[in-house]
Image (cartoon, rainbow, N blue to C red; front, side, top):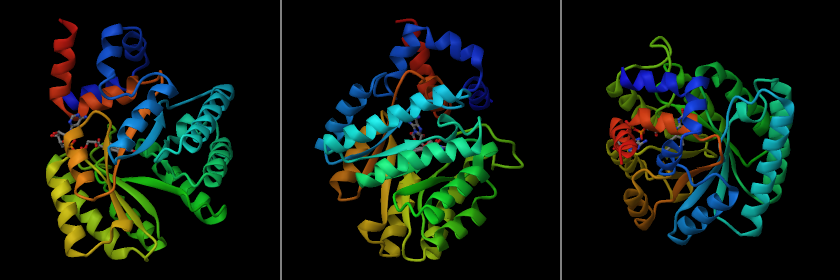
Length: 307
Ligand SMILES: Cc1cc2nc3c(=O)[nH]c(=O)nc-3n(C[C@H](O)[C@H](O)[C@H](O)COP(=O)(O)OP(=O)(O)OC[C@H]3O[C@@H](n4cnc5c(N)ncnc54)[C@H](O)[C@@H]3O)c2cc1C
């Protein structure tokens, strides 16, 4: 119930207006967000890289509805790629289709994504298309395939959510095509007809999907275990050992500000570890989804209000 209410609030414009002008909320959000500027994110990336941890940088924002706003977003992403290249950072980039104009038109999002992928390819930087709510699942997978197969980008990957009932079919198909897939549980408010409502069912499906992906992989696949859940991490480690998966075929991923000690342990144990580092002024929906994932984060936020 609390989770559902927070996920509703993460999409409510009125709540966003209040929170973004509220200095306490901004301060607490910093736990999960590198900062409002690209310089903040680049500084965090240097720090993590120096600890043997790779990064995926996300310029925060979603649901852009004007073409000029989407142009500004593309300019920022292109500058970000230039910085990653010139500063020799170990970082990929994560992008939401609704941030680059999908809600205006699919053609615009495809056009913008190609621009970003072209620049990224020249620098050998990988791009991941984040997965948003189920309104966008078909489009995200379709656009991912278009980029990979029609435009021949070998630096593109996407995300699959274990909470969706449709995921088994998606993962089998994507694995057999040789895809780079980030496997996460899923972070949006979805109807029970579309997504398993119980945590136990989502967890079971997460492990099943990882197994299926590695079984169906045509040899060119790459699996990114994006989770902070210790039992998911242990299952992933078991699968990697049991199926003898080589280090070039998988990595672990976590979010900035969540389980930093465990991130370091996995990196020190020789697994590729990548941290999702968001930055920018549009931190509200991202931050509220993080609160929804863990009630303790909400209490931490409430306590900060009275400090
Ligand atoms: C790198 C990365 C990229 C992602 N990309 C997407 C995406 O494109 N689309 C999408 O829908 N979702 C995405 N997610 C979010 C994901 O779907 C989950 O909502 C989120 O990771 C929480 O799930 P969990 O696997 O950590 O397990 P949970 O069952 O939510 O949590 C298990 C345990 O992990 C710890 N934990 C989890 N979340 C937090 C938190 N916020 N703060 C503190 N501790 C926490 C707690 O100890 C908790 O008990 C991404 C997650 C990661 C790590």
